[in-house]
Length: 519
Image 1 (tube, rainbow, N blue to C red):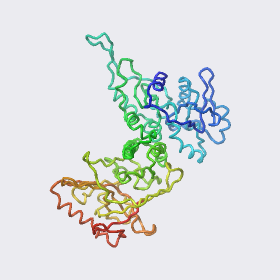
Image 2 (tube, one colour; image 1 turned 180 degrees about the vertical axis):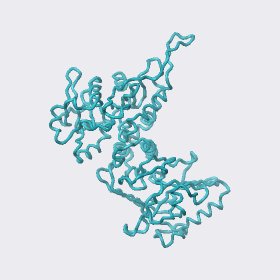
Image 3 (tube, one colour; image 1 turned 90 degrees about the vertical axis):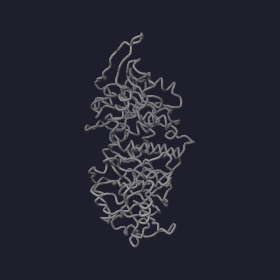
Image 4 (cartoon, rainbow, N blue to C red; image 1 turned 45 degrees about the horizontal axis):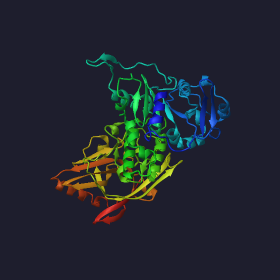
């Protein structure tokens, strides 16, 4: 571990540079040295500026570890007995000393656990805590704190073999990409929602796996294998490793970052995050990537709305719950985000992927206003939000059949994917509304995508008839020779069937447009 850390610090210029700041967390654990071990909390003012520290990523599990409480703060500043700490905490403290470091940040010992005020303040800085650390220790294979970092090692099979015409001894081992990528990405720790940001923002991570210790930084990923087993530069293909090296400029605050690229990076992150983000409290979903969002905001100077960016906002609305997602039995959950945000559903989401590389659609709606009511900071929990759009609406019939999976799409060539099964949450039980968000016409082919909406119950109480919730997503594709079908669809989108039910906002090309609010 020392060799990996030393090599990275001394040779990985640029790719593994910690954030250029003198940031220190509010509190750190001072662990002493191997020869003079101790353990106590130090406050920021008591720590010398420029001090390097480590962090820990771990799973609590069913056993609650010793924690920092309001009533124990003074005691912990003097001394923390190690006999009451979880095995993971004890191992992390030992590893810190072994690496020649004297400070480590552990969430439950550095954040006051029975103070909502302290938790909110510290949670907002958590991204900075991990991004500014010298290295992160990850209890990757441990499902709970009682297992520790140093699990019993059962290395995968390897065979030493002689190769004709060679004096070297080679080792035949498991495929490196499987050994590293899968074993890290699908390890117990990396299913925890909070850990996604911790792993992504950390400059360096030492993973304590089931069979080996792994190293991950912006330059390479490697593990404990015989020195001649594999070329260390060939084993750098994990999803996170590629992301760190490819998207360094976006996440590290480059002044010349391309905003289009930043949004693409963000949505790729969200695709992965939504499939790996398991939470004890679903309301933590936005908070747990607040640090990532903060770094993207510094790079782009774009406004942020409950998981969605102002730049290219319309394209970020085009997500769906993925293959089989709508069939899940989704119980009512606490409010997390407006329905137009991916954070509003507690299942994996997928972006709308266009069929052609040169797909350059035209927006068919206008964004008039976005408003989000915050509970804490810009990147934390929200208590409400609205999106005001101007566009054309069509009607989809037999919506309940579509929700139950029994019905066919209203028009051939259109695929509808609902966010939730069997719950329209609208006052119109048999109709939904289609809002085309973008469309492209080229070479006789028409394709695009949009949102399935439903009017909220008693919308007049909200001051307008035109208040909706998102119910799902739809996409369409019509090839050459389908002009008659397209014409019929466009006729239905004239909006005449909606007359009297909704308030017309304006007309464009003789067609009515509706100014709607999605909440």
